Amino acid sequence: MGNEVDIMGAMGVSAKYPFLASRKCNVGGHNVEHEFLYMPECPIQLLGRDILCKLQAQITFLPGGHAQLDLPECGSSARQYNPASQHPQSVKIAVIMPREEEWRTAPTLPASPDPHTLLLEIPGVWAEENPPGLAVNIPPVYVDLKPGATPVALRQYHIPQKAKQNIQTHLQRLKTHGILKFCVSLWNTPLLPVLKEGTQKYHPVQDLRAVNEATVTLHPVVPNPYNLLALIPGDTKYYTVLDLKDAFFCIRLAPESQPLFAFQWEESTTGARHQMTWTRLPQGFKNSPTIFGCALSQDLLSFNAQPDKVVLLQYVDDLLLASPTEKDCLSATKALLHLLCQAGYRVSRKKAQICKQSVKYLGFQLTGTKRALGAERKEAVCRIP
Image 1 (cartoon, rainbow, N blue to C red):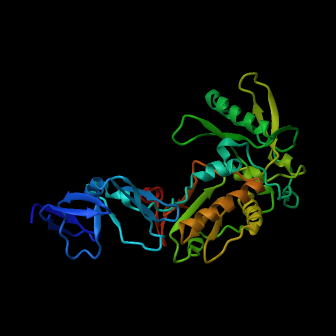
Image 2 (cartoon, rainbow, N blue to C red):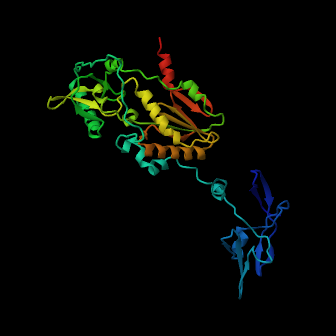
Image 3 (cartoon, rainbow, N blue to C red):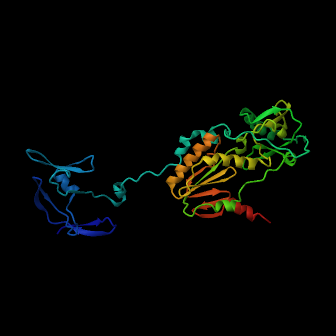
């Protein structure tokens, strides 16, 4: 017996094994002198790299998954071993490496589906790189007035110059895309400058209380969030959350109803005043969430949701996909994005949460079948006096 070496087995258990005294032997017609490792409990004979080098062996891996071993002899052609031949013999190759390098011998696992590929596969659906959407399957919406309702004309409030510049840029963009147009109307309601949270930029909010008072109220069909979340299956592990961008602007407004939403605007540079109105469903109108929710729900009827694989939930313009597997979740997400793109909607890429095990939805943090109040909701509750 000679020196000992520490051997780590496949089960992670290490043991010391000795080297035998050096012996001369003949392998494949090649005479070598070698110190063999003594492992009596090993069920097969192993050829390590050390003796393979002495034998000047050549190993060729064949397409069928077999290995061919060539052992050259002096003055003769190489002898070949092929497991597929009629007289196979057992030859194993032992590779000795540091423990930190053992990962290199692990089989390559199939790559997990990459949610980010959807950003490239369906470029037309993302709001950040495309013009505002238009729901091509939904007819223009007609707004009913209450019996006896008459036009209401309210003066525009004063808007600071700094806010006026921001708002004019915003209005010009909407006019460029046909969402706003010039008009002459007996109706007029004012715009309010609202500072965007966390920025120094203003955006316009129209005070439509007078119009809301004069129009017929539609019965709301928005579900209770708690009842909606109760529909999440018990085996859910993966979620996708999609937030539709400028959702109301996807719905066309009938020409007869457009004058109801007129407002007056004064150019920040020239001081010229003119009336403008919306050609799409405006924000601030009391029936906009109900109208849009019904329109989107109608377009989503063609989505092929399979209850055993994926469930689709809708809360106005916020969509949630729930699935037990990442593969099914990604497949359903791709199908849903294609449907939304073809129907003319736009999705916020910044807010998209694709195939995640924990997501934020309707102010809740969803993980598996568990839900907890999000940080924003908790802070709001704590601020209640």
